[in-house]
Image (tube, rainbow, N blue to C red):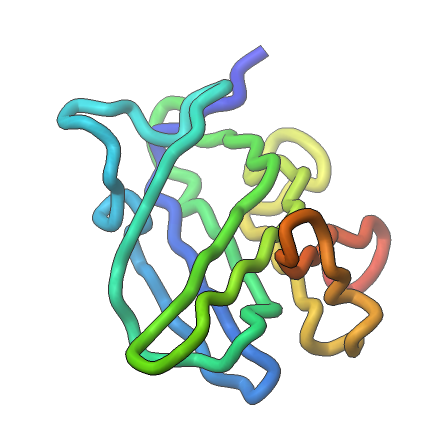
Length: 143
């Protein structure tokens, strides 16, 4: 079973006030060694970048594949985000994506949307180590 991709992955993170940070090519924020093959099965890929300040907690995620390349399907287990800025405390959110970004396997979507902002504080659960956790709610408007 294949679970990696050569497609371009983009990411948008947002807060409850509607502010967001868009990363059109997540790999450009990659911190792995040179020639690392991002988005491959069983890999843990690490990224870092700078963007405009948004409020904590980060409660919205849009993860999108462009669907290009010979292996376009990618299964994403989770995205963990740590956010900080000048004179701001560190904020952590974990988004349990648990979804294929692919046109040929369920849910047949190239985008995963997780929105803990729209459904209130119940979706933002304190997980381990004080991180907020947002789950992919299957069968709802948020998945």
